[in-house]
Image (cartoon, rainbow over the protein chains, first blue to last red):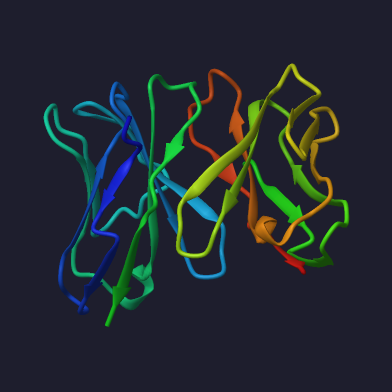
Length: 113
Length: 114
């Protein structure tokens, strides 16, 4: 039973480029959460999605960041026009329903040159 | 706004020692509290989850307690081993009607020396 799969594991982008991070939840899970871990800091909530719906995006920057979880396929966290401050580890978690424990992926480490 | 604090930020102990990691949170209206382990460059592994109605949970050498009214939780590790070296994160989930986001502390970096 595969866990939460994130890809790529490492992503390098130059300033101004776009970054796309993918997350495939555990089988049977329809709730996805994205968290960001800046260097030397704890994880911070970004966005919570169900299939085709954004439930809570209060932790996501208003500009350049967007997230989706389409009916088919993985959840995507998209960062446009990346800046050095976007360098972080981005973790995805999934749960079967909203109040069930969240299972985490191994993260995508984004580096901005 | 919920805030989670973990003390100490770092801890170094000799192998075999029993140790306690502390977590405090400002809003006692939580649904549950969870302790995670994070190894360098890896994701999070859930260790113990305590529902708001529970006082403690145990798994092997690990014991987590919860005092919701005072906003505190402790993770007790018995007979520590070098393989326990990792960062330990505490996270709280808000009350049932307040959404599903987890609020994390900044972690305690544990080093167990052989």
